[in-house]
Length: 362
Ligand code: IPM
Ligand code: MG
Image (cartoon, rainbow, N blue to C red; front, side, top):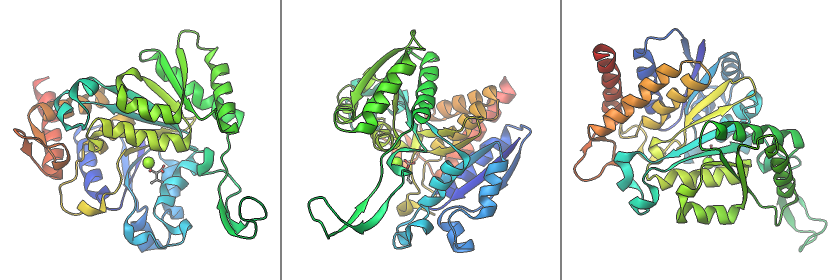
């Protein structure tokens, strides 16, 4: 088994280092190889996703990814911007199924901006289609308008599109995931306005007939955004397109008050996966040793479970994280009165210690 380790930019290097430390202490048989990605790769090789990094990712069973991006690259041409690295990896590895759990940890109920009773026990799984939609749809670009409100004016355009197989396969992923949970799926669309999403809704409904044991409902994206803050616990598995999933997954993550806690997995049809925290590169706190490494550590656990077939090792990491939270250690993002503030490295060390202790005491 081989893991490609791509720390990226900003806090990416700090948090990935902690996850690697945790993987090392598990003493499992796999090889890890690091490579540059994002702005770091642009600086060194002139491209955010160099051939060598892509090759390493392709030949690995899993990719452990940190984060990419920094404001200083905002002026680069789009193909050279750090974000293109993650989009390129998704596309080239065919990582169409993105899992973004939003779980409210018991000890962190107070970190949310919502009332504790609304989010205590929250456990939603957002499944976002990741290689289609307006993100990748062609044609796109700039041109002179020939029609519309201002013919002759400059305009920009993107294309929202989904093919039947794309919708079918992500719908199946959602129904299968629901079977392992509370057997409920909410499909989020904009069928009242968009052709693409009426098509999406029709196909999800069709696929749903193959899963009579799973309850399916449909919700418009604007309503879903509202219901997520009104009564988030009513959701279980949410399946949606790339664009809506981008937005709703940030919203869902923040419900828990701690985006620094949330892992994610992006899988292709052969279970090869890319694992990354749900948050970004946070250039404002990069290099300060204060970032929360738990989302990345939990992403490593998802990697062990989904791509490396090591569910026990994944359990060990997750239970160590709970122990560390129970012991009162907190990075700044989840700190509250009465808990102990620690830095990135101390948090990683604490998870390692919790794993080692469990190994010794059984
Ligand atoms: C995410 C991010 C990316 C996206 C960016 C960095 C391209 O926001 O993973 O949600 O839009 O998909
Ligand atoms: Mg996003």
